[in-house]
Image: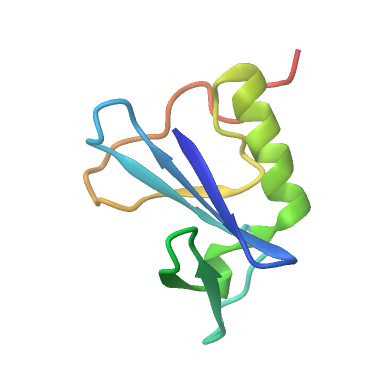
Amino acid sequence: MLTACSDGDRAWLMYLGDDDACCFVSRDPDGESSTAVRRFRLENGQVDEYPESWTVPVAVAEDVLATFRRNGWLSDAVLWVDDYGTGARPPDPVGGHDT
């Protein structure tokens, strides 16, 4: 399952594997280290905060979501970090070509 939260011009992405044993979150490959924080209001009213460097432009997130829907893989347009620290790898093929 691939989900996204957006706050206008930036989005945060999270991939959960089928068994919930892995979780990969987005990082902007062009992002710089910053203390800036982005806030995302969820449907239930909860507000989650993530460092801006964990977010990507909304247009990139839309492309990543479309690639995942179409092909079932995670685009390499963003960096994917193992959020659980398990040493797991994103599902293959990462960054495959659209067909």
